[in-house]
Length: 186
Image (cartoon, rainbow, N blue to C red):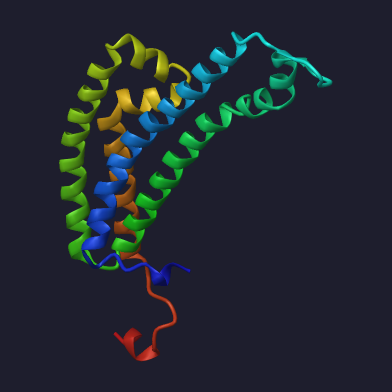
């Protein structure tokens, strides 16, 4: 299953870079979507109109049977944010495991972890600055786990990087199986 992954090229490094920024941007994008849906629902709740000739009678009854049921799925947006972050972290750790086949890539992962931890400080500071805006703060309030990750983003990157590094070392150190017996003659 994992044989199709080839971490011995530049795509592994570029994936780690893209994954770090995707974690940062995905939560903000999904918070904008969540905030837009909530604002749209609040705006619809203020609408008052009659629908003559229908079984509904007024707009709110019709909205309750149609649009509000769709808009009440907003918590799925928050769940999708968590699942997206989890899948990126899983992919980063899996890529670290596959990088254990090449000792040079173990060193690259160590360097990338150190550099990304520094960039994590910068991204965390940018996020803290963005939270000073009242609108952005209100928009990000439902995303509690994402806020915790972003406020501690350097630690998050460091732990994910160290887990990836540990798995790459474990993969490098493990005993090879299904090798010819001539390799085992001492």
